Length: 225
Ligand code: CTP
Ligand code: CA
Image (tube, rainbow, N blue to C red; front, top):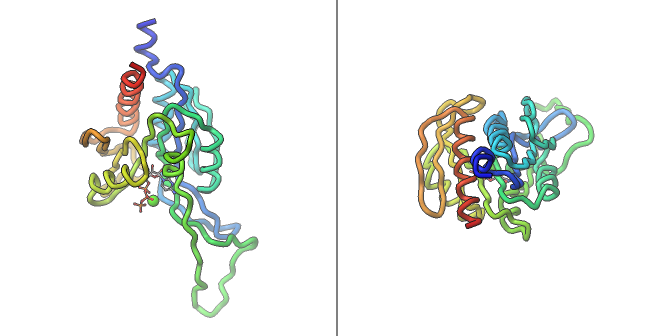
């Protein structure tokens, strides 16, 4: 009915969220990672579930509780995250909030790499990780609404506009991380779409999540009509 549609505007939709960092093993005790608390992605998963969506949350290593009503899968590396995302499709909406490591060690050592005593550093060959957002954008199971995040320290909006086109996302939430955002509870974002750019005021991460979910619900309704 009308009242419940208003309260649960994403009822009947499957929303896929990636969150947190990925860890790319170098050896059994070391890894390469991006800085990410996972808070923004978890807040979005929580807001989507509160809006009535069926939510699948694919999370890298974080120290956060699973939000109520959210189905969570934990992964370590970008390769594992890509597998989990592909298994979770199809979805009506995907929001890729994870700070995926761009590179991994080309060869993972099976035992701990030891210093050789020479004072020199052995080279660490890297390989480029798969781009999960681009790969979902190109997939036959591409969600109707595909949203990426972009953490930028400078030229925030222009970098995000370029990323939107390069990666085939519908929207990019551009996150200004030049201040003290990492691990904090507040975010300053710009919503970059084909229609233009909206500058949102600095808000707590749960308010950013609620505002984004509201925009997603409005878009889905328009899409149906
Ligand atoms: N992303 C992804 N897979 C990757 C890298 C990034 O899915 N291997 C997604 C992120 O989850 C995010 C978006 O792509 O939604 C933008 O990530 P970002 O790191 O800003 O983009 P990059 O193309 O890696 O650009 P940069 O060189 O600025 O790191
Ligand atoms: Ca990156």
